[in-house]
Length: 343
Length: 240
Picture 1 (cartoon, chains in turn blue, green):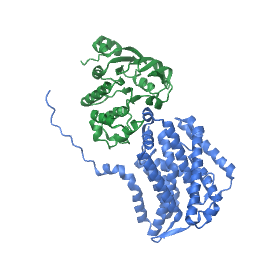
Picture 2 (cartoon, chains in turn cyan, green):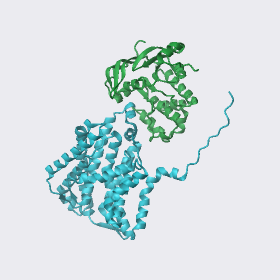
Picture 3 (cartoon, one colour):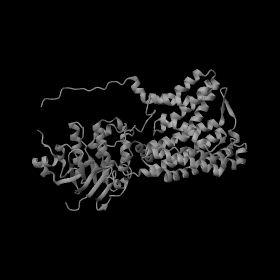
């Protein structure tokens, strides 16, 4: 046999657009901010709107992050996710109302302690409810999307009615803890303190989730399970337990988001979760099913677009998120950072 | 073949409305390579998936090392000591090579001498240790898939078509790696379409047709008998 011809393979240099493609979604948020800055005449209004958009985005991220993992990991569409948002808000607000003397005191530590206790109570209750919900409602309908939609919708209705039974039909008004009222002024812009707290909390949760997902074995199992659950089991892991854990954590985060949103709106109703689910689904879809990072970016985009649009062209605010959804899906039909490939 | 490590008795498996396995009888001896041969679509992959519990046997019994594993969950079957390399390799493409292997060592940290053995068998895995597994070539993915099964002590490996679609040079690497595994004393049940590889590695052999095992015996016997090959698999496997 003669020697093979001298063959030196070379790699074609990838074009700029190819090399940028994976990073583009990361650029969208700063790009949108720059666009907002150019479009909004006054820098101080821009800063106010940006902080409020980021705060809204962070709270939606809290609610949506669990849903995207639940879908990615077990292919379960949970329309009942909104129930945990409402339930969390009611539990948290009840705790805050019970601790009225703490929230009314002009002491930041007492205020934060009250808020912290409210968040912990909401997380514990919604986490437990999540476990029950998975056990009773979701488990019998694995692998059947239509049944999942119907039965989790039913679960949502039951949960809303239970809230009405326990807390009564009237909406509950709640004022923010004393030291979190009002705004700080920065560069001539009024930044609501509460929104800054929401941004900080959202960032902490996001960074913690990333840390767990990237650097722990359980995180590896979740990420691998989103891609190929069968193989994770074939390596000896009980994916069901991981899934239940994810479902519980996702429900608890929805409850956390619910409390934060309730204090942001300063009023809570039993159907607040169901109406927020529209935004949550938009975020999960544009982020890419199963991707926490995509979900985070999607939530920030939704928050910013809604706030900018409301300022620039109030009539457009109603449709701005749907427009964002359409635009992202035309650009990337599987969402910005899809992990789960379409089947 | 006394005291086999894996025994299938009268195993029937349905996939949807289709009756795929129709009473599989199979014994895999301890140590050595058992080839599972047969034309496409006769149930070889289904047999492996049924052993792993990824499809459920409707009837029959699967015994691993004296223990009935027919109804165990997949994770428990894997932990009993069976490594599985599926036909599609089942690589976690978003995870790095390192993360794929960390996950594969389910019962604890990856030991350094196992890692050395993996690197010795598959040097490219060391080169691409920190890169996303999705960027590996087909052959490298197959290496990773087998390396993943090797990341822990297993007593039986189920390996589905490890040389499918690979360049001849890489087929040789695979064959060498499988021979090393065999030398360690683990039992291997190997589905393989490449008869040259089968003849090289196989100690014993089972041939399937229509959801049943229709012949089993020493690999050498089948390799030496072209007429038997033609009768069992309906085609001549010798190179023209």
